[in-house]
Image 1 (cartoon, rainbow, N blue to C red):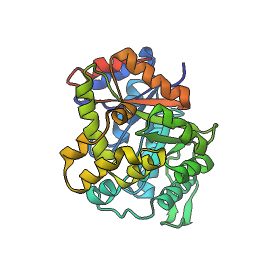
Image 2: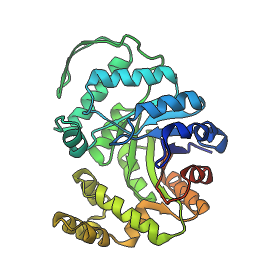
Image 3: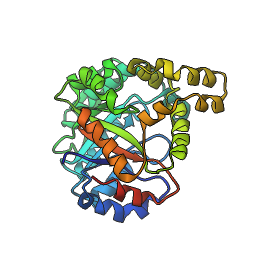
Image 4: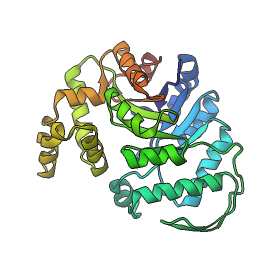
Length: 315
């Protein structure tokens, strides 16, 4: 069996209550725990807990925005977790979005490609223990060095959707992280990334046989995410422009109900895994068959016990 990841912490459970579940993950067959960061938990703290609770798991951030922290603070946070889980931590970084960077964190969101590229180059040197001084293009750093450089330095992966960022990940990072795609989209991602670079994909899983409920939740998520310009452009590139045109038009009018209703069932079924546990597992395995190295399940809320869902979705 290859890698099989889960997004942590789970929604609907207090973080401390997830300790015993985290400890059981390796025995269930999970190899990875990946965190996310938007307006819930930060990306690093849950992984620090899991590093102690389950020392056999690989840990990764998917992702930390490069613009919500200064480069030195980002390097310190990554170095701390890499020291807590030596050889088991992967730093995943990405550009994020104007809402998160500017709207919620009062930071500039300009030229995301250059900012991601330059931050990657800074982190490579800083996490290797170098004294870093100079102009990186989108920012400058004056004589920064980590007091506790980790050994080994953690791999760095980039969040990547379209060709430019995928090619950057292949050239300068240790892997790419993507999401909001169907299994049949993976070969198009692979064509830009190449065959040798690790591909991590977050897969949204709604483990219920109530298809109407799963599609209702899926539509709300799709209209919230895929109307963000970077995701809209991603799905145009993947070939869903016509399928999502009516959603975008309704969203632009401010009619969210109509936007949700305009999303075709087949698009929801492409992007949201739903059904019984075995059906969901088989669907996740389709991503692997098409070229994903590490599927990372994000369990969507169904009203049932999320810990039970994690156990049921184990490989």
